[in-house]
Length: 345
Image (cartoon, rainbow, N blue to C red):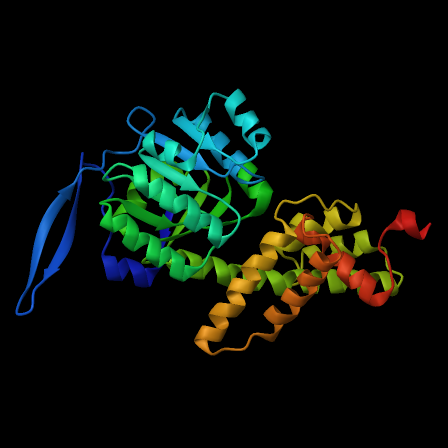
């Protein structure tokens, strides 16, 4: 499902659904003395398993589950991942393996990327755009730099292609259950055309033009960061107050302190399950981008800064490969306590 805010609906009117064989897109041509508007027709066939070849670069913790939904829907899928073992489950389900991002692009109408860092996004984008056919669509689902997303959109346009920034939230569970929130930035007609694919992974929220999907995801990460700090601090406090922490979490989950972070991670923390649904390394990257954007905007968000420092401390201890719920380890060290009942015994 594609969701638009009331303000954006008013701005774009009620966006047409892709009911025709092609989409007509308005392009403005500027001269020194006049501005003319011409209509060009770009052939974008309705996206379906019978007409659309899909490519995917980055089959990690979340990407692998998202690809599986595409395969189950009947699409032909070509994948690339630097570590072959992470792509093998998809190959077993019928995906084709490419030897490079460029090879994925050469065999695809729509290419998704979900990699680790902005430097990776730039590298694979250059390769993709070198061989993606005119009219092809690049969808970057990495949490990355908004400025880079705008730049990629311009580069894609120069190649007669399209680019959408569409980072997601919901973690590994959201990826497995196709319940992700997808923050989309770019041409609204292209995003509407992609709805057949995006709906297989979750709910799409149109946030505005190029880069706006990334801005929305960064705001999401700021909210999560402080929520995680609050959750872990509450658990440390309950432990020191000699409460049963599991009973405490159950008691607060139905009240104002309840949160998605508590739902997803409270139990994992108590079980000392720090397997990554989202890596500490990647979260530190995200929060670092947030801080740089705050500096550009001239705003101070102290909660964000504190969370960034706490997560950086995990990296310093060599714990960047753990999940974000490992934040409890940093707070345990600060307070010389452990919630690990086995260790306490």
